[in-house]
Amino acid sequence: MLNKLLSFDFFKRRREYGVVFLRLIIGAFILYGVQDNAFSFHEMQKFATFLAARSVPLPLFSAFLSAYTQMLCGLSILFGAGVRLAAIPFIINFIAAIVIAHRGDTFAGMFPALLMICAGLFFLFHGAGKLSIDEWLEQRQQEGRPSGAAL
Image (cartoon, rainbow, N blue to C red; front, side, top):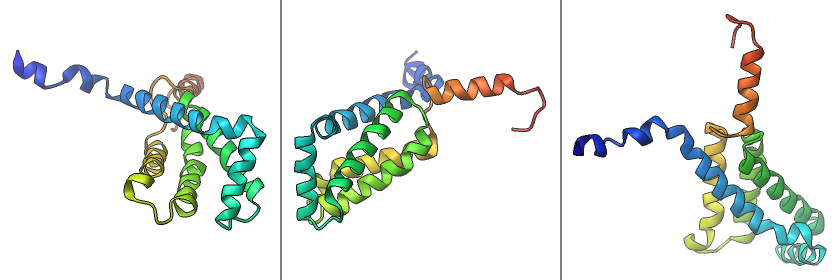
């Protein structure tokens, strides 16, 4: 009995659902963190001033690009829609965050951005997983394929 409990069979059989929890927390974290810039021009200007102080070219444009990239990628990850494609600008955005905002920072200070890069890499390699729009679209596509068709 104890061996059966310690084998974690229940969880092993449902391992594909683990990505759902990752998508929910990463998507929510990104949306929570970017909503102030996305919905307030005053906050966006403050972000642009921050970028200008770090010699980022076109700071207001760069602020909009970063904030709305994060928002779109956060929504994509949260709902599992186009996750692999969204992972690419997501990773690039957080590499830029480390180079621009966390230069000289401690590991702990960089950790949230590093975690987002790792999450982006996970989604790039793994995809959205279960309970996602991507999975639903893939199932619909497979249902429409004649049997014996090449994958």
